[in-house]
Image (cartoon, rainbow, N blue to C red; front, side, top):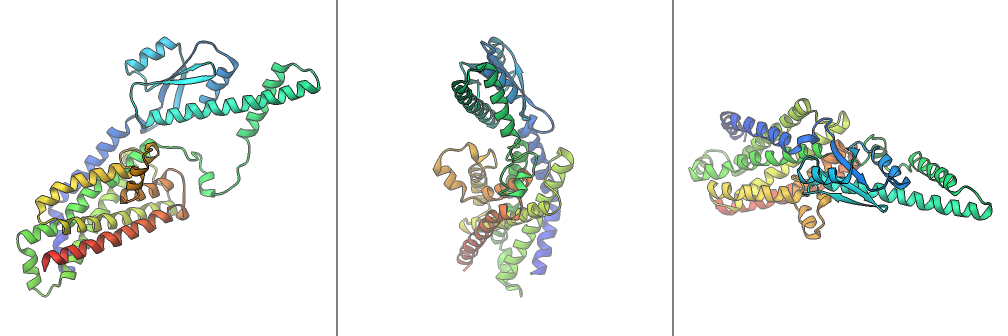
Amino acid sequence: MLSVLMLKLIQYKRDIAIVLLMAALTVVFIFVLSGPNNGTYKYEILVATDEKTPSYERYIRELSKNKSYEFIEANYDDVKADVEEGKILAGIYFKDDNISILKTKEDINIFVLENIASSTLFNIQSISKMAKEITNYIDELKPVDKEKVEAFAYKDISDSINNRKYMEVNKSYLDTDNTMEYDGFKHITIGMTLFMSMYTIVFGIGSILEDKQYHIWEKMLISPLSKRDILGGNLIATFIVGSGQILLLIVLTKYMMGMDWGSGRDFIWIISIGLLFVLATTSLGLMLSGLVKTQRQLSTITPIILTSTSMLGGAMWPLDIVESKILLFLANLTPQKWAIEGMEKIAMYGGGFNDVLSSIIVLIIMTIIFFTIGVLTLKNNTN
């Protein structure tokens, strides 16, 4: 097995330029796809209204507390014109205690904006309703200045909510500054790192087909090497190269693009999930190599399978925006979904081992299933 491993690593040494090129392309894709999400950039969102009512003033004040976007007041015509010309991501039109989002496209940033805008409005309306009920109750007991009492009640309720102490269910989540706050840059970085690495891994283990095509496989079987030695050497070599590429991308994105992968024990779980993902992808490549007969066939189906499963698994966009139960079910059948989910729970939400345990278990199960099918199909094809 060691001789096969060394042979494969020597072959990879000749192709090191391709591996490095894939890593460089991944960094470029992350930079292009993340765009303004990288760094301290904030989207400017224009907010317009026909009349500056107390509820509007409360709304704009609450929106301004959000760190993801920069909300700027403007008149409706300017908001509409800037949105149509593509100068801003979107606009918000506040009218009669309701809002409408002015937009010309659909993407994750607008989806997040819509959630922020609607949830902020709901919170304000809920607090306002409570403040009004309290004011009416007090006024029935003793006539008061309703406007002043309602304003005081609103402020008191709002402060109580903002300063309330949460029940500590998961300490690692509640102690973070960005509790359950979506980070588009981190999602793209994790997704593209895993997605692009899959090509190197699958085509790496797929070299078995090339060995068969040029009868190298048969020549190795004539030697004292067994099928187990040949297969094991290929698997270990592919695992080493795939792991190296993911580790390289983690380092590049950390120091070149400021990606926060976590530190200490958290970073260890990030690496663990990455290595398990490499194992699962290596086994997937082995299974694909067993289902086809030639390297050309593998080269044809691999981009289709890897791209489609990466889309389903959330490498291109977060699964939170997917509403189809069928697509969400199919996502659970992809290793990308579980690896991305596990890494995000740590890098984005500050989770720990208990939070990623399900991802670790599923990746191990997928590795066993893919590996078993791959070995059986290769064995049938070589008999």
